[in-house]
Amino acid sequence: MYDEKIAKLFAKASKADKTKFGYITSEELERKLKLDGAKTFKRKALGFCGFKTVKSLEQLGRLLYETGIVNSVEEGKGLVPSLVGKSIPYNCRAVAFDEVFNSKHEKAYKIWTFCSLTDTA
Image (spheres, rainbow, N blue to C red):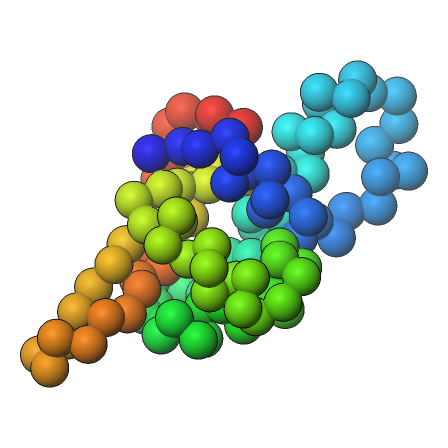
């Protein structure tokens, strides 16, 4: 499920050069930054061609920090539960988050991508 508040956080991960966008409205700029930020996060989490990975709370918190979405690993770890069940669009795909458990009932978080025919950002 798409969440505008979460999408705005992912815009902070954008590495796009805003001067190359030319003349666009602030809404268009915000949309481009959200898409680019989600793509940046996806590439850091899954690599160029990856589709799925599982991370611990600590690993996902660090990943959110390293991509610039949050200001600290602790803040990232606090954000993780609110990502569960959410998806962030980028291009014609989306990156999504789920909570999973292993055979020892230890909690972890799945990050995966899927084809998204609707561009919500």
